[in-house]
Image 1: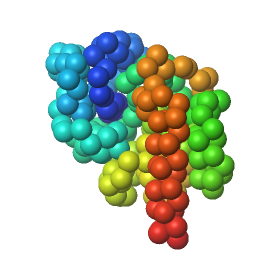
Image 2: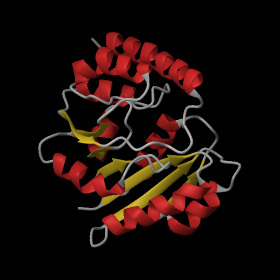
Image 3: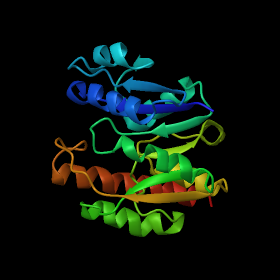
Image 4: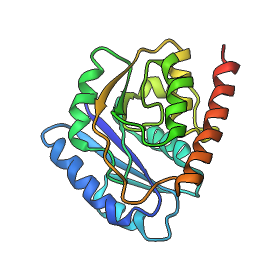
Length: 213
């Protein structure tokens, strides 16, 4: 059973090659593909991805959720792993995520510490209901069938929409805990900008949660 490993990128030229090399090492001996969906990075990320990944897709900038949805659609294997391209997620944890699929339909690699207060609020408001500490972690494993059975990516909630809809559909959601790895470059901007974006995503997520009760 092959594994499709998907990442979305924006200005990750320096990181995408290292990420793919790490994935190849971890997945050696297992049938897999690496899919990169790039949001039209001006730094030439997609050119690097095309030389190293199995599939590299360039699209207009619409955010992470739509990029991952596009990658899932392009995947040719039944099992999906999504991973951030900025090297915060450790590919060495991929086998643990895959092992979790023996008991759960969706497995999340939750950071052991949530550095932003907005992320901790997210965990309290949404995470407790889903049974997931780190709702905003996009380091996950699930089947392509699960992803195709729920519609997601209409709004940017940094992964929360997917988990909410999967939980509402009755899928079993589990997690593994992983050590927090600091990003060199914050994906959501400085502290004020990042917290504002996350709180907006929380408001959208609450609306999604209530709309599907």
